[in-house]
Amino acid sequence: MIIMNNKCNALVTASTKGIGFQAALSLAEKGCNVVINARNYDEIKEAKKKLKRGRNKVYGIKGDLSKKNEIDKILDKALQKLGSIDVVVMNYGNPKCEPCNLVDADYNDWLYAFNMYIYSTAEAMNYLYKHNERKVNFIIISSFSIYSPMQSTALSDIIRISLLSLVKTYSKYYSDKIRANALLLGSFKTEGAENLIKKLSSNMGIDEQDFWDKYVKSLSPLNRLGRFEELRDVISFLAFSPEYLMGSLLLFDGGSLNCII
Image (cartoon, rainbow, N blue to C red; front, side, top):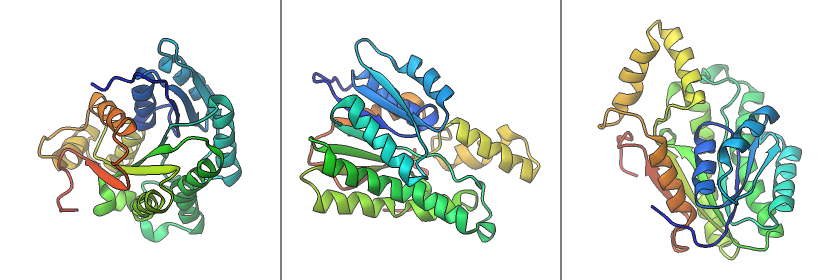
């Protein structure tokens, strides 16, 4: 267990549920003041109630990571609320078309995915490099599947592989104000994953639980999904890790990826 002795300020995007919420919870449990973000204000209000821990402050900012003006609004308001930012967890939603048949994805599908994953991350790094008084620790959330694209998430996987280049480039050339690491996750039972599995199992005409067991859990030699408490521990480790850990990726997938990276 990591114990925080000093107050920290954190921004976590796409964070009212699923992976993002668990990341925000991990930081709140360590005493951080946290800004959360989502496109739905009602979800923000509900998540804020769950994240309040002791004396820490929790703020919510409505905004869409796929839109430039809203990305800037999120960053600007987060700095206004917190004064300065120590940790940013870049989490994301899913492309609207997912599960996408790649040959049917149109220009808007590709543009949406690029803006949400790549542009929002680069803009966050650029903005905080210029306007934040402290060095920022970025944790970039992605998936093990970027190294082995799945048909149902191929659009995301193809775009998200570039996040690793952002992590390496900003850490190497802007290390005075930025350090970044990528966290490649395995399978967790989030609302987004459940919605995806529901569609895929329906398309294949099989039971949802059978799909989870046969096509998701079985990817790991542990034959199970990741647990949220495990995820929170990893987020905490990365958030308060030594400065020398930068420009790297951490594969946290229960051994699901069947290759060496």
